[in-house]
Image (cartoon, rainbow, N blue to C red; front, top):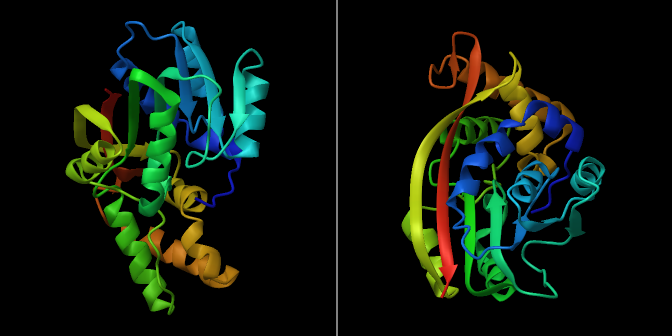
Length: 253
């Protein structure tokens, strides 16, 4: 992942990311759990909720901008800057939690991340997470790809959205036992009349790196205008993203 984050805009306009993540916290089997890692903690909103549940929690994120805000908001919590595919802990922990992060990691790097998580957990430790799943935001990405092609650019999908079977196999190959897994649709409301435009600007940066600035704006606006007629994405003046989520609890046996 090579994404530069605007932590202020992220907190203001996309708070749904961590608000929906609150439900994932309930997947953690709390018996005997003391030390927890929030992997890809962002601005620390869910790290704070983990701390409020009584866990000794540490947040890990690769983004300096996100961590600066996390530390400012939570001066009593420990935060570490590290890549999810290349981190080590001094002591093993009871659980590793992650929300809306793992789909940013390229498929070929997923085993590296899982190895780090596995090595960081004690025996019996839990890996609890939610990520984008197969079909996530498919209508948006299909429209973007069409408009990229119209301007002679190739759209490179910036996310990894696996099926339950595909991701469970990766986890099992890494040594985990999958105890719970669900793939479900979650249409997600976006803020304001420019909700989809802002969503694309925030989350779909990598494909535009080879696109000049004038074409970038045209592609985004054309995509937004074309999708405005899609009732699943724009209804009664409100934008929605066609999210599909994969939620899993796996255990290091």
